[in-house]
Structures are given as C-alpha cells and as structure tokens.
Length: 405
Image (cartoon, rainbow, N blue to C red; front, side, top):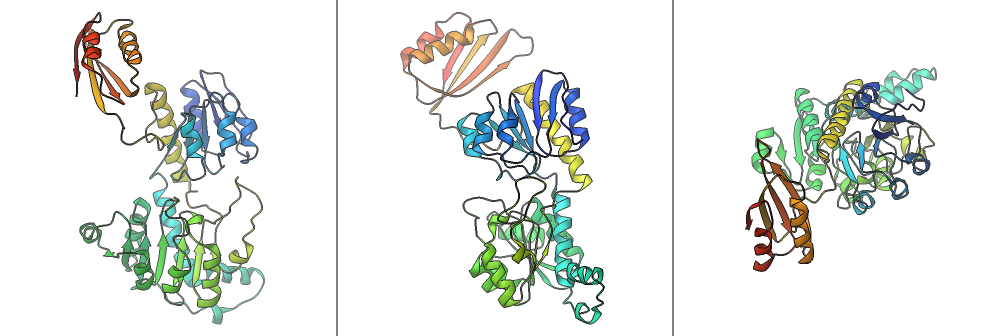
C-alpha cells in the first residue's frame, strides 16, 4: 500500500514507512485507526504525526521536532533493530516508549554481508558495469584471492555477527572475533578465535565484517588506525551502521592500500526511502548497496508480526515489550508492599499518605489474587518512610498488611 488509508477504531497509529500489508490488516483487526504514509521524510514527519498515539517507522528519522509535535504520542516502534534514527533522549523526556524488533532481520543482514564479501573479492559489481557498457574484461576480473581457508574477522558478535560467522565456517573460512561480551570460554564454544581488540582483528583477518550498534562509544571506532592495521588488499564489509566507520579514513585506505570495501550503510544517508546521495566518491571505488540489509520478504514478514505483537501487548498491559528507553535498574531506596482488599479507593488512600510524606514513587505494580478478593501492591520509593507513615498506612480501611524492605 502506498496511499494514506484510515479505518475507524479506538487507537490511532501512523505508519511512516512502507511495511508489509499484514501489519496493517492485523492492526485493524485490533481495532486501530491506521494511517499509512510511507513516503514521509524526516522534515515532513512533524506535520504528519497529528493525534497518532503510536508511530511506526523503519528508516524514516524521528527527530525531536517530530516527537514534540505528537501531543498524544505514547509509543514509537522501530520496525527493525537499531534505534539510532530516533531521538531517544527526547522520547524519554516526554515519557514516550521506544520499542524495536531485534533479531527479526538477522538472516537477511547476514546473507547480504556474505554476499558483499564475495562481491568485493570477485569485483562482481565492476564486472557487471563493464559488461553492461559492452566491455569484456575477463583478464582483469579473472583474478581474485578467493575466500576458502581465509580468516574472517567479525567486529561485534551479537545475533548477526554470530550468523555471519556460522555462514563463513560453512564456506570453510576461519573466524576471529572481537566483542565486548566475548569471553575466551564463549569463543571456544562458538569455534572462533578470541581477539582482545578491534585492532587485533584487523591484523589477523583477510576479510572483516562489522556488526555493532551505533553509540557514542562506537562512533568512528573503525578509523585510520584500524585500516592501517589491515592487510593490504583485505576486504572490509559494513552492514551495521555507517557512523561506526570514519568514511574519510576508509576512502584513504581504499585509495592508498588497496582495501576492497563493501558497504550497505553510510555516515550520511537520505532520511527516507529515496533521495539524493552525496558520498559518490566513496561509492565509486567500492561495492555498495543502499541500506537494504534487512530488506527481504522473510525479514519483512517477521518484523511485521513483531510490530503487531508489540502493539497488542501494549494495549493489554500498558507497557510494550523490549522498550529500549526504560530504566534498567530502579534508583528506589526501599520497597513498600501493601496487601489489601480489592476495593475502590484503597490504593488512592495509600498514595495520598505517601504524597503527604513527600516521598516519590519510582515504580508501582498491583497484583490481583485468583478470586479477586485481595491484592498485593509493591511500590518502589525514593526514600525510606518513617515509622509513623507505616503506622498510618496500616490504619487505613481495607488494608491487610504493610511491610517495608
């Protein structure tokens, strides 16, 4: 579907990218109002959010302005794994959940990474270009190193990195890897050589494939020193995030050291599915694709199912699964557990006493027991209540027990 579509329902959802039709159909079955505007750019998104409560994006950048424009916005879903295209800080400040769909495009990205390795080694893109131009250059393109028996270096050994490593072993390649979470024991289990740093991978590998998330720590992690450590003529592949690689340093390595590079991601990319691309000097010297790593029918259907799952759980519980911007560990100083009868106003009276005491509630969860007669409420508090507060709570109507840990 490419045109804006709306159905009647109880929840307003804006899909700002092209997604599988199954997403739309399933969301409508949940009773949602769905608007589909797949050609929205980052600049146009703020004017389009409107009254949407849920925003679903794939590649469209979600800026602070877009988030601020959504007065009803409560959930942003990235139909993919990385969330670097979303202003997480602004979403967090406004109490808006950001959820993603990790692992659903693992096979798709791994397949492209392997394809780019082979394409760079065999110069498939250049040979295709020349043939289409009517030039037969068998002598020039008939020379390649080949990958069997070579060492693949993997930078980042998450789900995609592991999938690439497994496929490389199937091609009879050796694998060396670096990851912050990679231990010697895990490396042995995964049948990879443990490296203590990215530079060690660069020195050992004939082919390198990068699979890292974009963070402040990984920005330009792959730079001039890394490329200087690589073997002359080695292959470098990046299908993760463009900002991890210093583009100027890569261009110099390609030009001066004969590094064969293959990229699916770039430091600057159009904010929507189509647009001008300004890194043509680099693109002219490498094998490249326009950020299509996750773009297979299989991955699209898996991501579609996950988007629907996130919305369904959010509707049922008020909390989306895999929210990436909720605090992992509470800063609360104490846990207050109130067992009470399941009556109207009981929790309101408890909260009133805590408010009067000037104590903030960091987290709260109320569990109802089987027959609906009683419940237990756990409140994580930013300071420990005095004994007098506890005694007041115990004296409230319909309270069974109050305990503090």
